[in-house]
Each structure stands twice: as structure tokens, then as C-alpha cells.
Length: 460
Image (cartoon, rainbow, N blue to C red):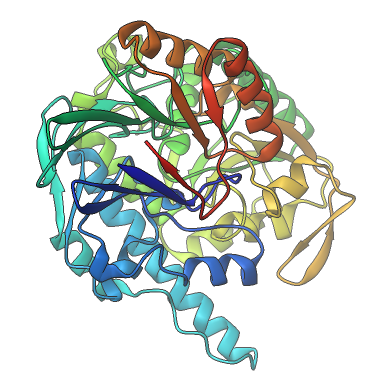
């Protein structure tokens, strides 16, 4: 058995790992690369392997950097099955359709500006065909992926429906278990359950996004959120929150609901300015089975995401009208790294105003607009124009859906305690500095660790 690391290798986007076992090839994820437009487009159009050599896909969760290239594989001729949890299936249907829409609009925009026409990676018809190939399997139920390879999902606690994957590969009389962590969540996050640790492994492919840092506690993040909202409102400003439509938007909204009930934030409007986030919130409401029933609000409130301060804006005209408001408000809009979507328009109109706050609540990859905001550049380039960055920038890493260094260590140590033969860990989904720091931490704990580059293969 061997694996080729085709994405999210020394980087945090484009998750894709090709497992070759029992004479078959199975992809763990196939996500979009993000970053510099030309570099990302070139990477996204390179197939991880010829589709006639790919037998199946096992998807850890619905985030676009994990699922976003699957319709491109289908467009290119992939006809195999795509396995995921039921909630991931329902989220991916919206996420992938939105991705197709953005790509089609981007192609039209470039053409209008006189650029050479670039065909989208895929369109809505490709997404519809993709969803026909999806097979949803609940947590903790073993299923056959291909002959000689079976899998089971364990709740990763990252977003709704996210999973770590246990992959059992039988070759002759020998069975090996590969665990793919997916993206590991954090204990105590709002709404969803805490991450579970698989019960056994020979080898692990493990994320390392925050392998070199620790987060503030979730309670600290909630307290700071209340302070930021109150201070910005007192200045007469607006709070602009770039947030992933899946997970982060619902978590922030959940805490705003809780803070409003407790009278800890002023009663100002909260706009969810993203049709995708509106649709995704409906998917959350369809899957209360994934919620953490230890949360007080989950137990006491039927409508977690709909209360009197919240407005969902679907139409473009409604979104544009927000820029004319002269009173304080909160706007949460995609995309999470501020690379596209309605948040870019809000930044173009509000980043220059020192009364406003740009609130960053998630990881910002290199070469993204969100990273440049976190770095507090004097100006940011939006729609080809330089906009002075005078708004306050606040970063709340306590809302990260990724485990930090200490939480990652606890996860792998717990897995090691359950599987004494576990020896090797392959680190993925992390930038080099984070991976190198975390690799050294694990080596001091007795693990054999490598951080493969994109395209590198390893014998398991």
C-alpha cells in the first residue's frame, strides 16, 4: 500500500491524497487550490491522476478546499462513487453549486474585460452529475469502498458532518489501517460535538494547520466578540466579518444569539449577507442529530439561527443597500478568506473608515486578501483599486475550527494509546513553518514523521 500526496502538501488548500491498495486507487478528498489566481487555476486544472485510474473518492467534509475539485473530476470522466456522511452530502450540494456559479461569473467577468475566455473548471450540470454519484454513510458504519478496502467515519468535530476516516486495506493475509484525520476540530466549539479519536491505526495522515501555535479559549473568543461588537457600535461603525458559509457563520451567529439573550451586546441589526450561508443554515437545521446536546442554547432554543436581530439577505439589491446604512450593524458574508463573494464589496466600501471593524475569525492562507488584512497592510487591493485600510482589524483565533498545537498533540497521543503499533505520521494541510514545528514536537514524542511535498509518494 502506498499514498501519493497530491494536494494540501506543505500548503493548506487543495486537499487530495491518493491511496493505492489492493490493486485499486482511492482519493481521500479532492479540493480546490486557493491563492494567486493564475497559480491556483493551473493547479486546479491538473488532474491528480488520470480519471480512468481512479476507483473511488472518500470525502472528509464539505469545505471547498477538500471537495471543490470533485466536479472537475466528474467533468473529466470520473464515474466512481463518492462516499461521505449524510450532512456532508447535503452541505456539498450547496457548496459545489455555489462554486460552479462563482467560476462561471468569474469567466464572464474576465471576458467582459477583454481577457481571453477561460472555461470554468465545471458548471452546474457537472455538480448535478457529481451529486448523483455520492453515497452517504452515517458515522461508525463500515462500508466497502472498493474490493479489499473498507472505511468508517468518525466525527472530526470540525464542521457539520466532518469526519476522520479509518481505511482498512487488505492485501493477501495482511490488513493495514490508515487513518486520515481530515480537519480536526476543537473541544467546546458551539453547536457541533467535540472531535472523536479513531480507535486504531498503523499509519496516520494528519492535518497540521495550527501545529505551531495555540488558540485562545472558546469562552475568551465569545467575550472578545461581545467587546468588539459593543465598542464598534459605540463608535457608530459596522463590523464586517469574512466567514466561511459553512460552520463559521453558524458558530458566530449562535454566539451572537447567546450574547443578545444575555444582554451583552447592543441590539443592532445582524445581516447574514450570503445566499449560500442562508442555504447552509437550513442544512444545519436539518441535522440536529449532529449538534452537541451539552450546549445550553441547543437544549433550550428551537430556532438557534433565527432571532429578532437577524436578517438574511439573498438579493443583490438587499446587499448593496447595506452600504447606505448610517447606523451600526454587523454583516457576516463569504468568503472566509475574503477572496470572493459579497464580503469583498463590503470591504471596498468600509475598509477606509476608522469607525469600522474588520473581524477575522478563521485561518487566512498565504496570498489571500484575508491574510493581507491580518498583516494590517496600509492599503488593500480590491477590484483592482487600492483601498486604505483604516478600519480596525481584530483577529479571533478562538473561533478556529482547527485544533491548535496542544489539541493536535492530544489527538495523536490518544490514538497512539489505542494502537501501540502506530509509528508513522504524515503531516498535511499546513504551511511549512507550522509543519516543521509540529513535526519536531512529534519526533520528541517518539513518532516517525514526515511532511511530504506535493506529488511525493510514501510506502505505508
